[in-house]
Amino acid sequence: MDTRIAVDETQETPRDKTPPKGDKLDSYRSATLAGERVAFTGTLASMTHRQAFELTEAHGGISAEHISRQTTMLVVGDEGWPLESDGGTSVKLEQAQGLREQGQSLRLLSEAEWLGLIGVHFDPENSRRLYTPAMLSQLLEIPASRIRAWERQGLISAAKRVYRLPYFDYHEVVGARRLAQLLAEGVAPKTIRASLTGLQSLLPSIDRPLAQLELLVRGRSLFLRDEAGLFEAESGQRQFDFGDEPAEVVGAEEVASLSMKPSGLDVVRQMTSALKRTPESQDWTVEDWLLAADELLAGGEVAAAIQAVRRALHEQPTNPVLHFQLADALYRNDEVAAAAERYGMAVELDPAYIEAWTQYGCVLAQLGKTADALEALRAALDIHPDFPDAHIHLAEILQRTGSERIARNHWEQYLKFDKRGPWANLARERLGLGLQEQGGVSRTGLKLAETGPLEE
Image (tube, rainbow, N blue to C red; front, side):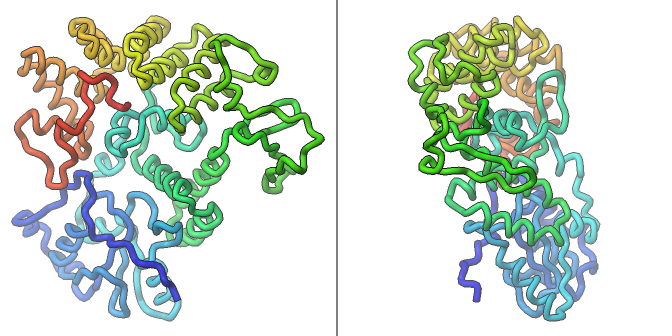
């Protein structure tokens, strides 16, 4: 018997979801779901569960919070995966599968299929909207540097790029975050893997989260390569690959005869100079140092991460991406002036580095150099007129300098690209439009241009 406690999936999420409500429901009324008893599982991308209940009843159906023998339809939300906090499959989904195996006629639909069935054609441009790292940072409450690190590790892929600026599919990043959370909470990878594998027959797109899971499991520890193969940087354990067989991590007592490296992160922690070479780090590549920096930043060891990026810069001193990453790390270490210098170096090396121009503008604003900040943000928009981050930062600075009329134009531009997150609520608040019903946080809860880069 399943002893897990079902998650209360009717709770509203803090994201902005705007399906029809109140009098607007009248235009959606039909008998499409007459005779249907509909339940929902997982997080919906288009609305809250409560709003989905209202739509179900507006179309002649009966909404149900629980699965029973009277249930005829289960809708699986498109945002994230229907996994419980213990990594197991959603209780409702398991119950539905059990009833189907017993011969009950119970349809399983994706959220998109359900919306199509009732004739609510959720705007695919909105449902699959693309987001910059900084926008995702605000939506998901994770550092933008973590999102960039996930891309470097292959965990997520940019859906498009404008010069160096990546745009990501929100749902892919949400899925990666959910898997990372489960692993961080101690859920065994094999439990998550079994759940995702079991969902494959129901959700054809499950291949991607399975691949993400494998990358996350491997990425939980930093692996570097030397002449003897892969080793785990934190523990020094060797990892051997045997052709197509699963990789095996060999314990220290089993490899006493091997020439072991010290912990990769210990090498960085013990560095007393950014340019100091050690025998252990002699053969490290720029990618190795960046992986070490990612791990250190994730663990809150910012000073050591700065050293790691500086070591990479010693190998490639004209790489603008490395200057950008060093600037991010310096800012997190409260070295604002030094961060501004590195952002400036990044745009000097690559004048089309849009993100660097925007971050440069934010830091300059924090340093009180308002005119220079405005110039930097306008440079970003000259290169990429549809860059949401630059519009929101520029609007905030313009408002503080008394140019509210011009600022309004930039808040309006921002809302063309984002309708659901905290920044969108900020823009609506500034324009006097009010927050969305499920509104995020007000301006007092945001990190705005006057406090430097927003994603940190």
